[in-house]
Image (cartoon, rainbow, N blue to C red; front, side):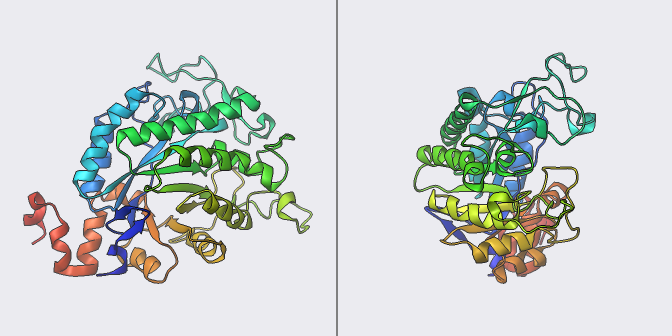
Length: 383
């Protein structure tokens, strides 16, 4: 058996291989946040296609936490009931269903990418759908909004912060009722929790702003809330941006302590990894960027893997890490596991291009021994 197809045990959850479908927004709900047949086929076909874990797209914990009016949500029991058939089908294919719990913060209330991705002000209609209107969004510090347009932003007060924490707690409870076995907290890509983490977007002067401990407080409190309702035998993941890719943007070039950093850095991620491990997080899903238009990431295959690798090597405890970004080939994915650069590979765009990437990887890496993984209905095509 190749390393990519070795099982991974996290708490009492047995993952059949090291391949996960990365969360990828589909922007394909009606304006009620309920999943459609598109979601059922999109997620189900990747489970058929050999993924060990199938994660939903960013799923909003409250309506104003959606990126667009057409995002998936889990802020009511109706959402949980609608998602239950999807999780059941994923499990029937031998994969583990996971949900990414998210709040878009000041990147909320947008048009869909193929409709321009511009902010929608409250009451502004997205287009032909008269129910697709904008709303007032929440942010740690509204003056720090770095993108174009003029969204209506309100700085979160203490009550707003507590509302978000409870929204994550309730969403986790509903996710459990819907049949998900993994809960992932989205703290990356410039969305709300990342906005609190990074000094680029967090200019607060209360207990949720300033130094590293205060800026990470909301993520810790959300994690604690999710872990309190998530069963001990099931895993909790957190997705972070390993760096903002903004380390060199200040002209002075002065060295800074982490409490005086000018952006979220890899050093920040190692520190927060230690905090999250103590709170019962099992795996850190390491992506990067998404916070600011001046970010300067490198390009090419595996460009984010060194972030995951460093966190895996330098953090304390038993926290596993997932690598993501530019992973397109079976041998490439297998090497990441074999060389202990990551514990899990999260594949995004390649799974969009090829829903059966996991099965194809089995064929390429294990030959005829991987044939049995194909559904019996499809085996005539691979003999």
